[in-house]
Length: 209
Ligand code: URA
Image 1 (cartoon, rainbow, N blue to C red):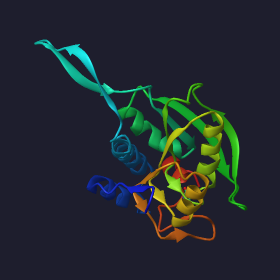
Image 2 (image 1 turned 180 degrees about the vertical axis):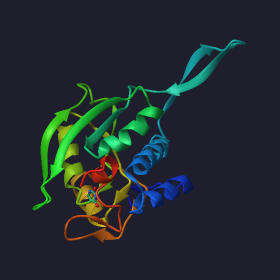
Image 3 (image 1 turned 180 degrees about the horizontal axis):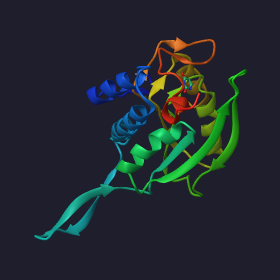
Image 4 (image 1 turned 135 degrees about the vertical axis):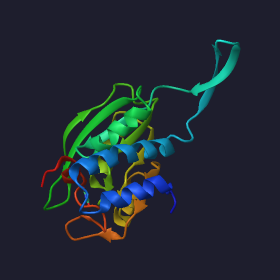
């Protein structure tokens, strides 16, 4: 599928299977999400540019690679995006963080924005937008609309599961934004849930209903 990278690392797939099971507890789900997000972060940052810098080891001066450019921005779509954020920050502690509050109206499945806070200078940074579930695509499309309004130009979208319908909508709205996901599932049901999915990611990570 063009523009979609499936992260098929065995550890990712194994952890995802445990997360999908309805018998997995809230505590295990949260721990697995943190672990899996580290692995997803590793893949979504795999092609970042490096630049050579001069450093001195205790033995000699060398040219060694460091990440080039401005610090990354991780943009979390509240509230479930926060579950991916922590593991990603474990790996890239210097990343800046944006929070975008969007909830789905359960009747219309429309995205309603209620909060937006991002670093001032997103223009020259790589922005990695995170939300575990790409379902209808409405929340992620609205969030990326907003980030683009603020000048973001270099954006990637990272999720755990995606529905084909969501991918279609997303790519229609934002064809320039590559999608990274651990799985493309079968379809969306009439309530907008990904099937087979894992249920409501926010509820599963926070133990709400
Ligand atoms: N959001 C979720 O948390 N789960 C779904 O299946 C779809 C959207």
